[in-house]
Length: 149
Length: 142
Image 1: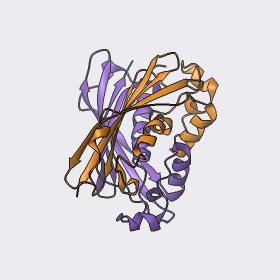
Image 2: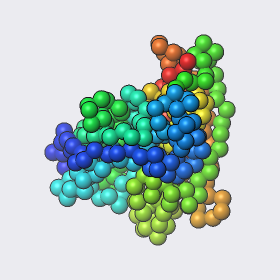
Image 3: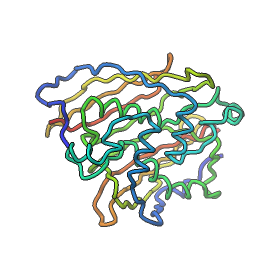
């Protein structure tokens, strides 16, 4: 079933700030198999010039999709989540994410299009601190296999 | 927060030696928990085959994370990454055995930009498949 194009342009603000913790960063680094001490040890991070433990580059995926995720589950969109795979992903970094950051994510559906038998949907997420400092912008394109058939 | 690679010592066309990263089912279970992506295609073979996939497949973001690790290990500072984007061009199929799958990442310096930044093009393969395409990182060198 084709996705509902009326969802293009809809923005879904995050409900509460996401608190970045050292424990979560360490868990994420372990999950991707990256042993870099800068992801686990505050002393190592500070010795490298960072204020606290640093999050790996793809860490924003762990929290940035939560606000957009609700939109994707809206029955009016017509997305069959069982057929979804990841199509493209991009991160533009203003600065690294550190333990202790409190982040706000605002997600917008920027595009819905067909590609062959598939439907493609792109979500842009603007991540800032609670004080409004830009931290990262992510672009996430998912593919609904067979959605346009 | 300083890259260990110096801009003046890098040339366009310079290759970054390939590295292998293994992915087994346990890695996908850990990644599901850490990332919050519990889509059963990444851990449940019964579900994966029912929706037309050959077997359990790795999270695309797991593969992207290995590409990120490749770049940050080269540059020496995770904070040096300015921009990182990929297209997931093929699936990484992860069989339920002790070997799992292997993702091989290599890179080449494609372009030197202003402000001591460079564009690194990445290639990621698993078996015969090219699993990332249009994979590029912009990195701040020292």
